[in-house]
Image 1 (cartoon, rainbow, N blue to C red):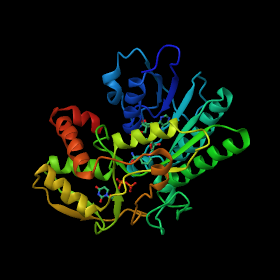
Image 2 (cartoon, rainbow, N blue to C red):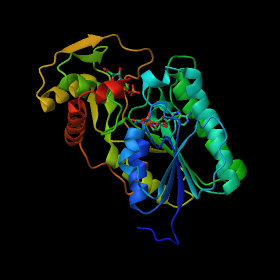
Image 3 (spheres, helix red, strand yellow):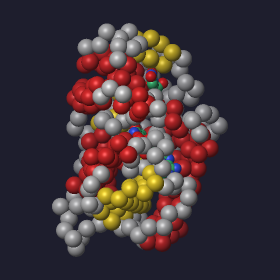
Length: 327
Ligand code: NAD
Ligand code: UDP
């Protein structure tokens, strides 16, 4: 726990989102003063409602595509819709959020001379032809497809971070996050884990896209946040990019079967068309994080799914609230 003298003023953009709200919990627990900046596009005040009266948390509704003038000691840039359904809803705004958002926050970090963290993504590897994906892989990304607003936006943000580092000597930390799941995912954001769990709990058909043989590697949120904090605390010369994710690799059919077994659901599996440019495989090579941060994920998929199912079960049983959340 920090004391008054070494307390940090920390800015978290996207702090009312899934990952941002978990990060804020941990920053407050260690004694930081937190400024949460979010335009509430996909995030919700509900994700930080348990902190409403917290004396060290301040919320500011703001869109990071516009400049921000605040005084802080550290910046965590997480603002960006993360699910394909949400980032494809307004693709121009998605690219602006990554690119203009990065320019605005890097400008802020440069003025204040403070470290800045960027939530990048495994999507920078696109539909990878190298498997598993090490940080040295440059990726296989369609620049003009329906996922490009997100993939290329995040790639350009990485470029900006590294150019601000080279050109202006900024302290940067760039993490490439692989699929992460857990409590506070939006029940209606279209991501596979939340979709399957909500469908199973409600006895609806489980929608597997394509033949279900495409793979993903799923990291439980607590493991990921441990990696974030270890990375930000690492020596300034370790700037990344560094992969954070759980290397356990599963097909979407395997995931559907696990969710059915863990919920005891009678839902049937149905197949729907595979969205365009949907990567066929994805699995992080996490040797760099293991070597440099001593970090390794601890929570396996069954344990993490059980915790996430319990969360959605509670949420769905709160009558009326889900309709409100899903709106
Ligand atoms: P999320 O949608 O729950 O959170 C994103 C937050 O950013 C939301 O609160 C949203 O309202 C806010 N936001 C969006 N555009 C904004 C803007 N222009 N100005 C201010 N706020 C804005 O998603 P998440 O899963 O918590 O993802 C957080 C970050 O991590 C994102 O940058 C995402 O790209 C990255 N990431 C997440 C995953 C994952 O599996 N969860 C994987 C790779 C990368
Ligand atoms: N997917 C699926 N059914 C769903 C939602 C997603 O089969 O209801 C598939 C999707 O086609 C992709 C994988 O699950 O192959 C992961 O999708 P998600 O949107 O969670 O993340 P991303 O594609 O960005 O990894």
